[in-house]
Amino acid sequence: MKNLEFPPTPNSGGVRGKEARVHPHFSGSPRIGGGGGFLLLLLLASMFLAAWVGQGGLTPRETWNALRHGPYGQDNLDAILWSLRLPEIVMASLVGASLAAAGVAFQALLRNDLADPYIIGVSAGASVGTEAVLITQGAAYLAGLAVPLAAFTSAAAAMLIVYTLARRGGRVAVASLLLAGVVISSFLGGVSTLLLLLGPPQDTQFILGRLMGTFQSASEPISVHLTSEAWQPFQKSGVLLLFLLAGLFLLLLEARAMNLFALGEEAAQQLGVETERFKVVLIITGSLLTAATVAFAGIIGFVGLMSPHIARRLAGTPDHRAVLPLAALCGAVLMVWADTIARSIFSDGRELPVGVVTAFLGAPFFIYLLRRQQK
Image (cartoon, helix red, strand yellow):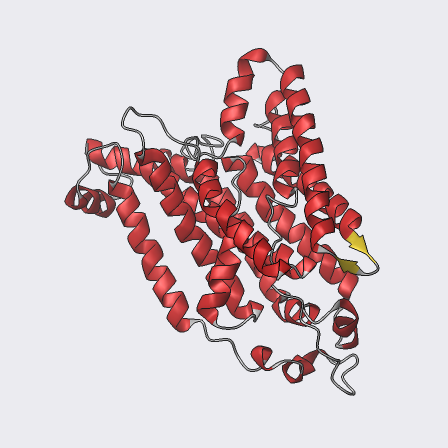
């Protein structure tokens, strides 16, 4: 989002409830009904379309019948849908929503609409933690949560380093942010390469495939003891859903503070925002959401960049109380379509990495935003 430079409201110091007098866009309750309803219907329609499009020969009627039969259906088509395709679609929607919410958090924190988990190095940080656990065969530890926890730790560390390097005189400049993100991403890319060389050669191809952005492993259960056999393909999606709900809850609690922080750090402090606590919450939450997606689906770029912008256009306001839920829905729709394209483009059974699809969409979008900021 563009930096908003408004003078502080007179006599506003220390009163959190007076943010409505700062800027008219933030006054009253946000209205997300129309845009939210449209995006929710679009998401459901996209998920249904994704369920029958692809390499399986399912027709719309067969897809609908399989959905009605549920995971306990006995037909082969039921097994194809509930054991393979639907877990992939559900995970794609959750990953898209998580990356979009992380994008909202980082753009609010840095007061910069070019911020994105992929661009500023958080995804690269999460990949190092993920790779370290996979190489050491530690994925089964901590009830299957070792990978996301390691990814979260390394992602938060990367975000803190980038933020510290880019911050000068109480502000984060665009050029400093991008340069710091490129430097840290390049360094962490070298660390990832070193880890691959030090790890077992037979695991290299598997780890590279996991980190390139794919949902092919979505149906692999974390533990056969966690759920019944019919629901085991959705175990990873269940864990990812918990991360997403926790992240959205924390960000929604900070939505008003994000609105005030857009006015500048000093103005936010005068209006009652505990800025240091606020920054820590956003760093941890954004890193948590990013780490969960990298741990289960690999590195997927630009979703966290595009979704908040689309959401702001739909909401007609920069108010984060409206932007955050709309961005999550936008990210889910975008990722479902990216996954559908990735697994449908080849006719010989191969799947294109989802990160390739989002890169073709996101790179021109990023260039457009960068040129617009330079004007």
